Amino acid sequence: MTADVLIVGTGLIGTSLALALEGQVDVALHDRDPGALAVALGRGAGRAWDQHEPARHAVLALPLSAIAPTFVVLHERGVAETWSHVASTQSAVQRDIETCAGDASVLCGSHPMAGSERNGPDAASATLFAGRPWVLCPSPTTSASALRATRRLAKLAGADPVELPAAQHDLAVALVSHLPQVAASALAAVVLAEGRKNPASLDLSGPGLQDSTRIAASDPALWTEILGHNARAVAPLVRALADELHRAAGVLDGLAAGTPAAAGTAEALTSGLRALLVSGNEGRRLVPVKHGEHDSAFAVVRVAVPDRPGQLAGVFVAAAEAGINVEDVRVEHLAGRPRGVIELLVPPSESRQAAAALTAAGWDVVG
Image 1: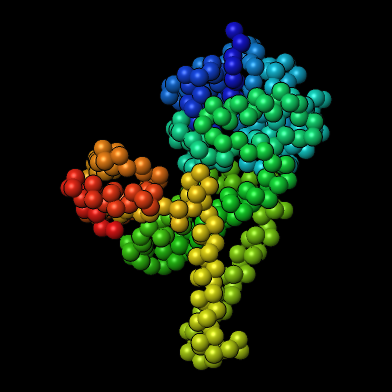
Image 2 (image 1 turned 135 degrees about the vertical axis):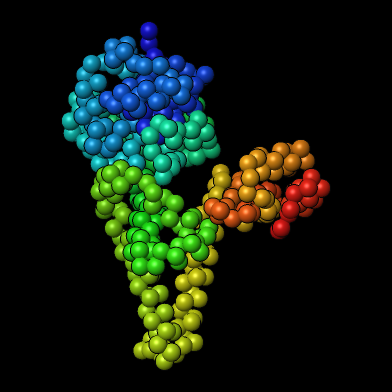
C-alpha cells in the first residue's frame, strides 16, 4: 500500500489534521509515544503506519528540535515523495534542515495558524483549521511539487494557504501569537502572586481575567522551545509591551500620589492614561475576528441564558430556523453563576431580524 498522507506526530496539530483529512485521503499515523498514537487511532484519525509502506506526502507534526533529525532519517529511507512540517517558527528549522539534509528540496515548511491552550490528541478537532490561515514557507530550494503538495494539504484541511518567506513569518507570529503568550503568562503570574495573598479576591473574577489568561494554561515545555527559537523577533515586542506598562504605572503612581508629578498636572496624567486606552481601542480594531473581518464588520446580538445544558444549541437552532447567518459566537459564562450571555456576531443588516426572531422564540435578548 501507499498512503496518501503520513503524519508523524499525533499531538494536537497532527491528530487534528488527520481528523480534518478523514474521508478525503488515506492517512497513516506514527508516533514514538504509543499512548498518544492509540488515542489518535481510537478517535478515528487514521490508521497506524507499519514503518515500511511509502507515502505520497509526509507531514512532520513534531517538536521543533525533532523535525530536522526525523526528516533526515526518514528521507534517507525514501519514506515519502514530498514532505512538509508544521513548525511554529520557520527560520531556525529551515536552517537545521538545510544544514543536515542532503536534499531539502522535497520539503516545504508550513504553519497552520490554529491551536489551543490544550495539548495532545484528546484536544484535537477536525475543524481546528477551518477558515484559518495556513502559512507556506518554501525555502529557495523547495521544489514546485513539494510546495504544491503542501498547499493541497492545507486546502483539504479547510484552511486558507498564505505564502510567506520564513523570516517574515517569524516576525508576524512573534506579534500575533508569541507576544500574547508572554503577556498572558505574565498576567497570570501576577494573579498567582496576588491571589495567594488574598484568595477571596479571585472569587470576583469575570470574563476579562478569564479571556486575558486563557492561553496561559498552555504547555510550558512547548512554549519554552517556541519562544527560544524565535527570541530575536519576540524580545523587542516584549520590551515594547513592558514600556507601555511602565508608562502606565508611572501615570497611576502620579494619580495615586494626588499631587502634580514631574510629568505634569493630574489632568496631564489622566490624559496620558486615556491615550493608552484609546491606542488599545485602535489596536483592537485591527485584529480580525473571522476571515479577515473585524469586530466593526459585525453586529452583536446578546442573549442571556440560564446555566443549564442545551442553551447554546437552542440559540443556534432558533437563529438557523430564522435564516440568520451567525458569523461567530462568544460565550460569557461564569462558573457557579445562574446565567450567562451568548454573543452572536451577525451581519449588521440581519441584527434586528435576529433579535426579533430570538425574542419570538422565547429567548431573553439583552442587546
